[in-house]
Length: 350
Ligand SMILES: Cc1cc2nc3c(=O)[nH]c(=O)nc-3n(C[C@H](O)[C@H](O)[C@H](O)COP(=O)(O)O)c2cc1C
Image (tube, rainbow, N blue to C red):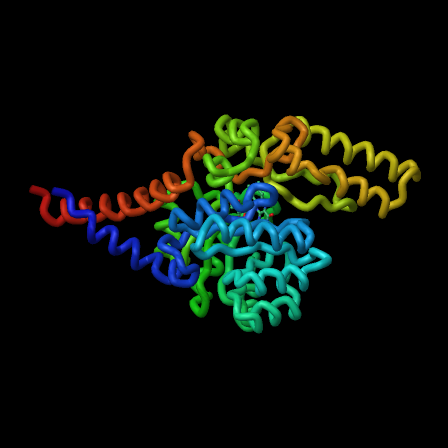
């Protein structure tokens, strides 16, 4: 009979550091997704042995407070809160997390400001930050950040320019002091195993959980994920270098086409003098306002922003979170087992 215990033990050892940091069974984080990562999905991920993270997004402090309390009512397991650094009430949001005894605060969307870093640390929570390059990763370690996420350009949502394959090689061998979690384009357990073997502490996935049974995303949103291939999840396009567009990866749709047209029309207005530079930049930035909510909650996947990672091609059905997590673990363990069998066979071909 097949003995899977050694492969399971090896996988457990590889992910032990990340799991200990998160206080979970699996070193798998559910990446915060605005409008998607609310009480139901977050609690489902944590209850199934992963680590759910609430996406605060643009929520005012009172709403975040309610969301944390509602999540705590659904799970007694650890979960985190993701705060966007440019939120005008960042300091209040940090205090709300600390008062509610949230153990892990993830600061996203820029370099974590000093006062917020100190407040998180003084309040006894663990601080997680996104490192887009090795120099910043080293700086964050020095400034007391407790763990890093390195998110490749394969990811859904706002992205940097570098793929996880490259970021992992640049950063993992050099950051040993604190756990580093990898994100972007991960859809299977074999990939998680590969990054663990490179030195990652664990992985963060978004897209696969967005299409889970427990995700409150509209049926149309989930169906769009089921239909899509990796090549359909594209970064937003910037038409003119004078008017920067923050790159966001999502499914190509009518909205994407309209955005290109909107940029072209805005440029014409700028060139004709009808709009000054600031007004033109604002007009471009405002195009997507409310568009993620429209897609996720209202189900407008034609003109809304259907943020998705390249991992979307690996979403083949709507599954309960527990099944997704079990599948990821199973794939990693099966890969270790297959390797062991190949080795044994090479040593003893008969
Ligand atoms: C619909 C959607 C919304 C997202 N919103 C946020 C967000 O509000 N804050 C954040 O830090 N990351 C956000 N992300 C990124 C995820 O947390 C995660 O890092 C990413 O999805 C990982 O790549 P994957 O989708 O290929 O698994 C979002 C991703 C998606 C798909």
